[in-house]
Amino acid sequence: MSYRTSSSSSTAYSSYSSSTSSTSNDNNNPPRTETTGHRYATTSQTGPTGATTIRTGYQNLGEEPVFEERRFDSAGREAALLDTQGGLGAAGGTRAIRELDEDADEGEWEDGTY
Image (tube, one colour):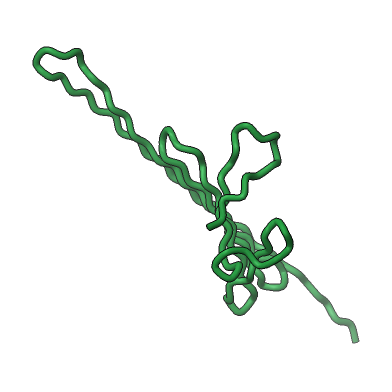
């Protein structure tokens, strides 16, 4: 008798961005243009064990990007994330929000958990 095992994983990705620009001209003032924008991206990856990792990033025009990672076990329960000192993070370790520090070397993160 032979047994066959297989493992599968799936990945999904979605993103959107929007921007608007408007120009106004008051009576004696030069034309003024105002631009706003927002972008958002999320990726979801489910491994062979059924555990899922969801990574989200968003940014408003002129602001720093914000990244979030959430992990769920195969039953859909959110897993506690460890903080940089090895303990549970804020809010029972259920969420981690980090902001990218432009002055840091690539790959380094500024801990922005609350």
